[in-house]
Length: 359
Image (cartoon, rainbow, N blue to C red; front, side, top):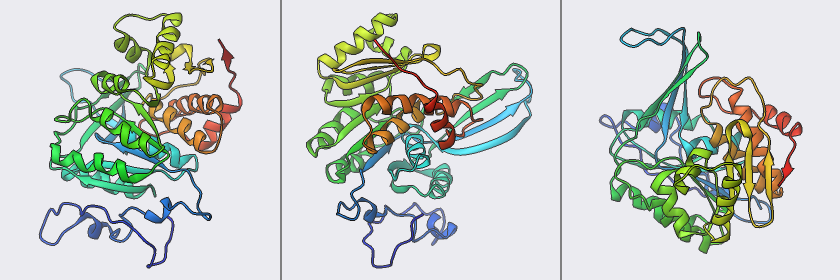
């Protein structure tokens, strides 16, 4: 994490919930001075003209992955190579932006004993953090790779229940953050209204920011019905649910174009599995074929796509180049095991080998 003088202006996070008399996570880990938002990173001045990216994680996870020789029902399954990482949509997007050389800010909800563990993992990333406490514990998700078949089993809980009073400070923050890009990624936790992401759009756009969303179901539909989304990234399955019908390649392109034309989103990027990915906006329709890689895990591939795309835009790259880099990052994440995300060297290597087709 970047060093700073004691006089640097900082904005403290909410204090972590004590689990004993006089106990706090910050004191326990020795991060009492570092576990706060480095506000000076976001000052706009002649010496720091960086583009600001704010990632929102309302339903973060602790992602646990492991290997098992064989998974059998009603039998104890022994595992090896266990790995734990901070995860969930917004968290993974921030991790990828950081891996590629960016300096995102991550705003997230955290609570309970699992929240303490999540806080510890995030503190190690060096990402600027803003933590909002909740009463219930953060969820844990599991990915098990069966060695005999090569199949990956993924178990993703719905997450904690979040009260209105615990969510509102996050909404209020958006009117003050002044970020150039706000990325709302991941599912909504229980108890949170389905129009939560939709409510975030106006505060961002009114301050000149761009709102990027990667979610599904009613949370996505209400955001698109509201409009003014800069970019959203559905999978083919998610887009078909949104359309309410099966879509072939022409159908995907036409439905995405409808969303752009009516102002729901400025850019639509659809991941098509073995058929690659599609970018649709008013200027172009672009397809990048799928990269055939020796995939080890699908965990975080979509988040990596979004993170790399947004990072590329912050570097001043055109949308088409950013889209190609996003595709490369998704493929690079598939190369890593378990809950590990993409590596910068793999992303750049895959990007150089990519070809795009204008439709």
